[in-house]
Image (cartoon, rainbow, N blue to C red; front, side, top):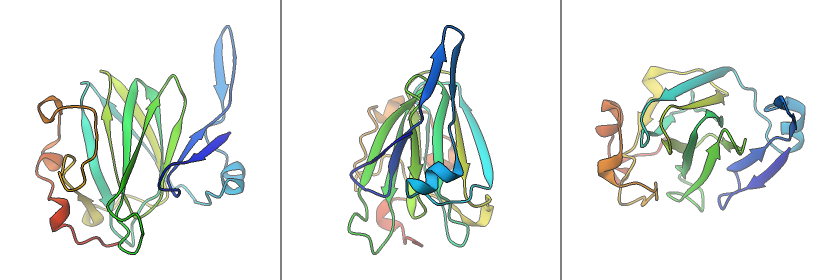
Length: 183
C-alpha cells in the first residue's frame, strides 16, 4: 500500500497493491491494521455506493456537521472521477483551500478525506461507479452542502458550468461566503 499526503497533508491518496495475472487482479483495498500504521486510525461504520450515468455529474460539495461528521475513504469501481476536498476547519492554516486527485477503476487509487472537510467529485466518463466508507452514520439533520463552483473557493473541476449535471440539492447549495463552518 502506497500512502501519499496531498498539499493539505491530512488528505491522503492510498494506492493498494494489485496482484494480477491473465485472469485479472486481486487488491486489498482496506486493512485496519495497515491503515493505522499509515496514520489513518478510523473505525468505518457504513459503506456507500453511487452510480452516475452521465459524464460531468457533480456530487458535492457535501459535509456532515458534528457530532455526525464523517471521514471518508473513496474509490472508483468503474470509470473515473476528479475528487475534491476543501478544508472547512476554522482553525486550520489551510481553511478554504482545496486539493484534488484523479481516481479511476484503472489506477486503483483511493482518497482519504478526514472530518472537517467538504467533499465532492465529478465524473470523467459515463456510467461511473464510486464506493466509499464513512466513519459515522448518515444523519439527515447534519447534512449540508456548499456550491460546487463557488468563485471564492475557485475549485478547478475541469469542466464548464454548463457541462455539469447536478442534483436539485447541489444546484441550490449556499455560497462559501454564507457558510458558518461547524468545524
